[in-house]
Length: 283
Image (tube, rainbow, N blue to C red; front, side, top):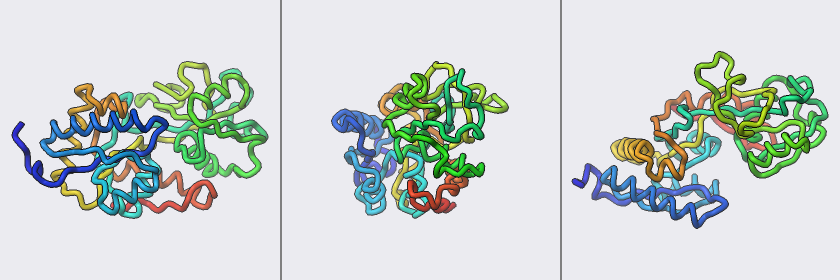
């Protein structure tokens, strides 16, 4: 392969957030970096796995050039001008998903007015789809979250939340849902959801929010950004590590609207103990 512009510059370090299986993540990250290097003509090297806060700090101080960030972390980093989103993964044909509060199909709980005293199952306090975003939606609709639920449990995964709701251990739960983009209401036509194919009733559902983000340090040259976007697209569309590791069918370039929708919704939680204050991203 003939090196492209920038190929002889310093290697680009790509980091990811720590997972439940760091060894496997490191192996997959290495394969992804090799593929991106081959496709872009630039040297991309594994930057290791990091805790969330340290990941953004590593981008801001130049220890990392690229990182795979969840949406809330991307929003915080962008708002503080610590990172810049360069690529959004596309899954199920869309680059966004929704957060839904759901219950069993035969549950008497049908609308948000029925929530007083119910048992709620959440993923964890930092989960965007499984806790934070749906709480923001409820609060934006005037629901007082303090004292609303009779019981609240954090179960650690979307599968565990779905199992608790479907088994009757919890009355409602929060999870992700990919909505049919051709549907006028969306909620009635989920393509895929955290509860799988189990019959469920959606009590409340957010609009589109961004999936995870591939971000770069803010001073990464534009030609490097574009090269990485094109390399990610080629890798995912060819069934490479970007598809197997990130589950992406392809990638698209983000627009300001992708994060602005999340900023508007999360403003309802600015004073919540579960979420530090968030500022809108700069254009």
